[in-house]
Amino acid sequence: MLEQRMGPSSDTAHFTLAAGERVEVLEQRIGPSSDTANFTVPAGERVVVLKQRIGPSSDTAHFTVAAGERVAMLEHRIRPSSYTAHITAATGVTVVMLEQRMGPSSDTAHFTVVDMTKP
Image 1 (tube, rainbow, N blue to C red):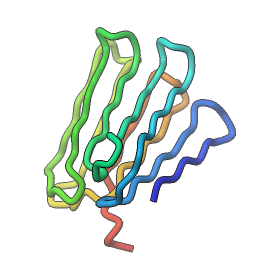
Image 2 (image 1 turned 45 degrees about the vertical axis):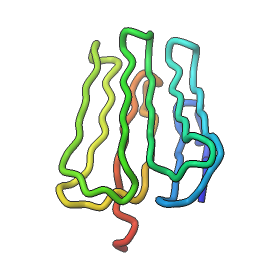
Image 3 (image 1 turned 135 degrees about the vertical axis):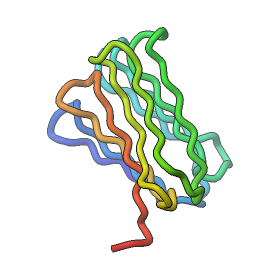
């Protein structure tokens, strides 16, 4: 499953990737070039990689999470505060879905790893 829902404003986007499914390439760009976020899943590979780039190159962050991998909490903040990004997962939760929400500012993104095996 590969799904994209664009919200009422260009600041809002949702991406859902089902763990273990094969996809081609998903790439998202939001806002002006300095506020661009790119998401890429390599062609032919299973959904195991999430790459996030926000802000100028000096504020670039990359996140890699293996689908189905059990993780504790992953958190990364990039400077300055207006270019804050997070990727988090509860301790012991199986990583099966990656969802990205763009906040009120296109400089801010939050990534939540959700366990879809639970209701």
